[in-house]
Image (cartoon, rainbow over all chains, first blue to last red; front, side):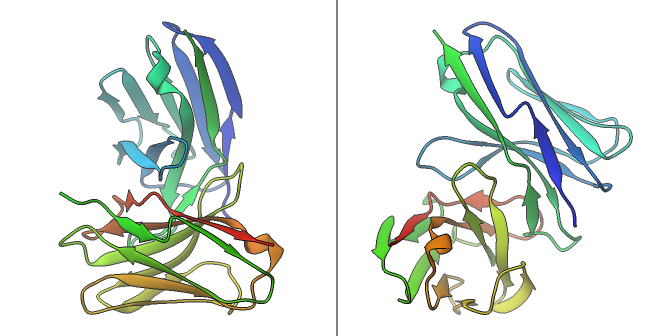
Length: 112
Length: 111
Protein backbone atom coordinates (compact mmCIF):
# COMPACT_ATOMS: atom_id res chain seq x y z
CA UNK A 1 0.00 0.00 0.00
CA UNK A 2 0.90 3.66 -0.05
CA UNK A 3 3.50 4.80 2.41
CA UNK A 4 5.11 8.12 3.26
CA UNK A 5 8.61 8.07 4.73
CA UNK A 6 9.88 11.11 6.59
CA UNK A 7 13.43 11.87 7.51
CA UNK A 8 14.96 12.54 9.83
CA UNK A 9 12.79 11.02 12.58
CA UNK A 10 14.04 13.61 15.06
CA UNK A 11 16.24 16.69 15.12
CA UNK A 12 17.92 18.59 17.94
CA UNK A 13 19.04 22.04 16.89
CA UNK A 14 20.15 25.33 18.34
CA UNK A 15 17.87 28.33 18.23
CA UNK A 16 18.61 30.36 15.10
CA UNK A 17 19.66 27.40 12.97
CA UNK A 18 17.93 26.43 9.74
CA UNK A 19 16.10 23.09 9.51
CA UNK A 20 15.44 20.79 6.55
CA UNK A 21 13.26 17.71 6.47
CA UNK A 22 11.83 15.64 3.68
CA UNK A 23 9.16 13.16 2.79
CA UNK A 24 9.20 10.47 0.11
CA UNK A 25 6.45 8.31 -1.29
CA UNK A 26 6.26 5.04 -3.16
CA UNK A 27 3.55 6.54 -5.38
CA UNK A 28 2.77 9.84 -7.07
CA UNK A 29 0.78 12.54 -5.27
CA UNK A 30 -1.01 15.51 -6.81
CA UNK A 31 -1.05 17.37 -3.52
CA UNK A 32 1.45 17.56 -0.70
CA UNK A 33 0.56 18.91 2.72
CA UNK A 34 2.72 19.79 5.71
CA UNK A 35 1.22 19.81 9.21
CA UNK A 36 2.61 20.63 12.64
CA UNK A 37 1.39 19.00 15.83
CA UNK A 38 2.02 20.46 19.27
CA UNK A 39 1.71 18.27 22.38
CA UNK A 40 -1.92 17.64 23.32
CA UNK A 41 -3.23 19.20 20.12
CA UNK A 42 -4.34 18.07 16.69
CA UNK A 43 -2.24 18.71 13.58
CA UNK A 44 -2.39 22.21 12.07
CA UNK A 45 -1.92 22.78 8.35
CA UNK A 46 1.23 24.80 7.57
CA UNK A 47 1.60 24.66 3.81
CA UNK A 48 -0.26 23.04 0.90
CA UNK A 49 1.41 22.31 -2.46
CA UNK A 50 -0.52 21.53 -5.64
CA UNK A 51 1.94 21.48 -8.53
CA UNK A 52 5.18 19.62 -9.23
CA UNK A 53 8.14 21.94 -8.71
CA UNK A 54 6.05 24.43 -6.72
CA UNK A 55 7.86 26.36 -3.98
CA UNK A 56 5.61 27.93 -1.35
CA UNK A 57 6.46 29.98 1.74
CA UNK A 58 4.60 30.71 4.94
CA UNK A 59 6.70 33.09 7.03
CA UNK A 60 9.93 31.32 7.93
CA UNK A 61 8.66 28.06 6.43
CA UNK A 62 9.28 27.06 2.83
CA UNK A 63 8.06 23.85 1.23
CA UNK A 64 8.69 22.37 -2.19
CA UNK A 65 6.72 19.87 -4.26
CA UNK A 66 9.27 17.52 -5.83
CA UNK A 67 9.44 17.31 -9.62
CA UNK A 68 8.94 13.55 -9.58
CA UNK A 69 5.76 14.11 -7.48
CA UNK A 70 7.05 11.43 -5.13
CA UNK A 71 8.72 13.74 -2.63
CA UNK A 72 8.42 17.01 -0.80
CA UNK A 73 10.71 19.12 1.39
CA UNK A 74 10.12 21.51 4.27
CA UNK A 75 12.63 24.10 5.41
CA UNK A 76 12.44 26.28 8.50
CA UNK A 77 14.77 29.25 8.65
CA UNK A 78 16.13 30.86 11.83
CA UNK A 79 14.40 28.43 14.18
CA UNK A 80 12.85 29.68 17.42
CA UNK A 81 11.70 27.75 20.53
CA UNK A 82 8.05 27.74 19.45
CA UNK A 83 9.02 25.71 16.36
CA UNK A 84 9.25 22.70 18.68
CA UNK A 85 6.77 20.00 17.73
CA UNK A 86 6.19 17.15 15.32
CA UNK A 87 6.03 17.90 11.61
CA UNK A 88 4.04 15.62 9.35
CA UNK A 89 3.83 15.38 5.61
CA UNK A 90 0.56 14.13 4.17
CA UNK A 91 -1.06 13.38 0.85
CA UNK A 92 -4.60 12.59 -0.28
CA UNK A 93 -5.72 8.96 -0.50
CA UNK A 94 -8.14 9.84 -3.32
CA UNK A 95 -9.51 12.80 -5.25
CA UNK A 96 -12.58 13.33 -3.09
CA UNK A 97 -10.76 14.94 -0.19
CA UNK A 98 -10.95 14.33 3.54
CA UNK A 99 -8.88 11.17 3.43
CA UNK A 100 -5.18 11.68 4.01
CA UNK A 101 -2.18 9.45 4.48
CA UNK A 102 0.44 10.81 6.89
CA UNK A 103 4.12 10.19 7.31
CA UNK A 104 5.45 9.08 10.68
CA UNK A 105 6.62 12.57 11.56
CA UNK A 106 9.82 14.48 12.26
CA UNK A 107 10.16 15.59 15.87
CA UNK A 108 11.93 18.93 16.22
CA UNK A 109 13.59 20.10 19.42
CA UNK A 110 15.06 23.60 19.63
CA UNK A 111 17.62 24.49 22.27
CA UNK A 112 17.49 28.15 23.33
CA UNK B 1 -14.98 31.25 15.70
CA UNK B 2 -15.11 27.87 17.41
CA UNK B 3 -12.84 25.23 15.99
CA UNK B 4 -13.49 21.51 15.85
CA UNK B 5 -14.55 20.33 19.29
CA UNK B 6 -14.21 16.77 20.55
CA UNK B 7 -15.49 15.13 23.69
CA UNK B 8 -14.46 13.71 26.00
CA UNK B 9 -10.81 14.80 26.06
CA UNK B 10 -9.68 11.72 27.96
CA UNK B 11 -11.28 8.33 28.50
CA UNK B 12 -10.26 5.16 30.29
CA UNK B 13 -11.97 1.88 29.41
CA UNK B 14 -11.33 -1.80 30.00
CA UNK B 15 -10.97 -4.52 27.38
CA UNK B 16 -14.27 -5.65 25.89
CA UNK B 17 -16.11 -2.43 26.64
CA UNK B 18 -17.63 -0.10 24.08
CA UNK B 19 -16.86 3.59 23.62
CA UNK B 20 -18.48 6.54 21.82
CA UNK B 21 -16.48 9.60 20.85
CA UNK B 22 -18.11 12.84 19.72
CA UNK B 23 -17.12 15.59 17.33
CA UNK B 24 -18.62 18.95 16.40
CA UNK B 25 -17.24 20.40 13.16
CA UNK B 26 -16.53 24.01 12.39
CA UNK B 27 -19.74 25.82 11.52
CA UNK B 28 -20.47 25.44 7.82
CA UNK B 29 -18.23 22.40 7.36
CA UNK B 30 -20.15 19.43 5.97
CA UNK B 31 -17.35 16.86 5.94
CA UNK B 32 -16.06 15.07 9.03
CA UNK B 33 -13.18 12.62 9.10
CA UNK B 34 -11.86 10.43 11.90
CA UNK B 35 -8.23 9.45 12.44
CA UNK B 36 -6.44 7.21 14.91
CA UNK B 37 -3.01 8.30 16.11
CA UNK B 38 -0.94 5.76 17.98
CA UNK B 39 1.93 7.18 20.04
CA UNK B 40 4.95 7.90 17.86
CA UNK B 41 3.10 7.59 14.55
CA UNK B 42 1.18 9.81 12.19
CA UNK B 43 -2.62 9.86 12.15
CA UNK B 44 -4.27 6.98 10.29
CA UNK B 45 -7.53 7.47 8.40
CA UNK B 46 -10.58 5.65 9.80
CA UNK B 47 -13.74 7.19 8.27
CA UNK B 48 -14.98 10.13 6.27
CA UNK B 49 -18.57 11.40 6.18
CA UNK B 50 -19.98 14.07 3.92
CA UNK B 51 -23.59 15.22 4.11
CA UNK B 52 -24.35 12.23 6.38
CA UNK B 53 -23.10 9.71 3.81
CA UNK B 54 -20.01 7.56 4.38
CA UNK B 55 -17.43 8.55 1.78
CA UNK B 56 -14.61 6.30 2.77
CA UNK B 57 -13.35 3.81 5.28
CA UNK B 58 -9.78 3.02 6.18
CA UNK B 59 -8.30 -0.35 7.02
CA UNK B 60 -10.03 -0.82 10.36
CA UNK B 61 -12.13 -3.77 11.61
CA UNK B 62 -15.92 -3.74 11.77
CA UNK B 63 -15.70 -3.00 15.49
CA UNK B 64 -15.25 0.60 14.36
CA UNK B 65 -18.34 2.44 13.16
CA UNK B 66 -19.37 6.05 12.77
CA UNK B 67 -22.24 8.25 11.77
CA UNK B 68 -22.95 11.87 10.97
CA UNK B 69 -26.03 13.72 12.15
CA UNK B 70 -28.17 16.33 10.34
CA UNK B 71 -26.27 19.13 12.12
CA UNK B 72 -23.03 17.59 10.72
CA UNK B 73 -21.72 16.51 14.11
CA UNK B 74 -20.39 12.98 14.24
CA UNK B 75 -19.85 10.02 16.53
CA UNK B 76 -17.23 7.30 16.38
CA UNK B 77 -18.09 4.02 18.08
CA UNK B 78 -15.66 1.26 18.92
CA UNK B 79 -16.98 -2.07 20.23
CA UNK B 80 -15.17 -4.88 22.04
CA UNK B 81 -12.19 -2.69 22.89
CA UNK B 82 -8.70 -4.17 22.65
CA UNK B 83 -5.53 -2.93 24.31
CA UNK B 84 -4.29 -1.92 20.86
CA UNK B 85 -7.16 0.53 20.48
CA UNK B 86 -5.41 2.82 22.95
CA UNK B 87 -4.64 5.95 20.93
CA UNK B 88 -5.46 9.59 20.31
CA UNK B 89 -8.61 9.77 18.19
CA UNK B 90 -8.73 12.88 16.04
CA UNK B 91 -11.70 14.39 14.29
CA UNK B 92 -11.24 16.78 11.37
CA UNK B 93 -13.73 18.88 9.49
CA UNK B 94 -13.60 20.42 6.07
CA UNK B 95 -15.95 22.47 3.90
CA UNK B 96 -14.99 19.99 1.19
CA UNK B 97 -11.70 18.94 -0.28
CA UNK B 98 -8.34 18.40 1.28
CA UNK B 99 -7.89 21.17 3.81
CA UNK B 100 -8.66 19.47 7.10
CA UNK B 101 -9.04 21.30 10.40
CA UNK B 102 -8.34 18.98 13.31
CA UNK B 103 -9.70 18.99 16.83
CA UNK B 104 -7.49 18.36 19.86
CA UNK B 105 -8.55 14.74 20.01
CA UNK B 106 -9.80 12.23 22.54
CA UNK B 107 -7.10 10.26 24.34
CA UNK B 108 -8.43 6.72 24.83
CA UNK B 109 -6.69 4.35 27.18
CA UNK B 110 -7.77 0.70 27.24
CA UNK B 111 -6.69 -1.27 30.30
